[in-house]
Length: 256
Image (cartoon, rainbow, N blue to C red; front, side, top):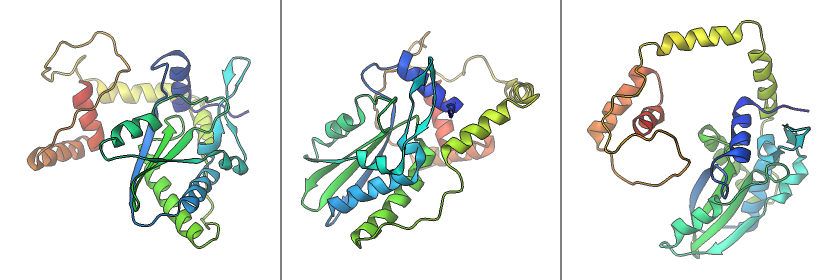
């Protein structure tokens, strides 16, 4: 049996014992598609991508109380059906939320669902919701790239041809488990982070507009605002100075 990676184990535990009991954590991919669209070719392309990437067809059954990975065969990519719906631009946010809401049964269900929202004869939005146990921000670019390649091939009536992937996620899991079990690894990691974080305060000193919560919640919301160019350039400079991504800087500000 293939064990879970440590990231997968965290998401699996949250799914079973915490968080929103009505919705799974998902990483959405939203693609606005303008022009004539072959929905049959698009559905076939989505299945091609699922067949190519084992992480998109991995389920997590439990044996003797311990979850493990089970990679389904490429033929199970056909379990993914592309649902269709007509929506208005005004109804788009609710339609997207409906696709991304709800729960996945990680023990037996593909961790991906998709729906094509039509806002006109030649204007569509493809919504792909993938459980975070199988997908993150780094996954978006290869997903979209492989989907584009597969769709172009399916339009010509042929299967896509890709270079073989050198590793799959299960390979990474086994490597990670072996690395972290090696002699002295845990102490070396602790020493590194003690040194890297020793000067940081217990709590960020950023000003707040409300009292700090004593316990976290899993409730989320959406606040839209614009960051001006000078502030954006300053944030990007701070990220470079700290050796981290812009996302990490923004997350630190919001999470503070």
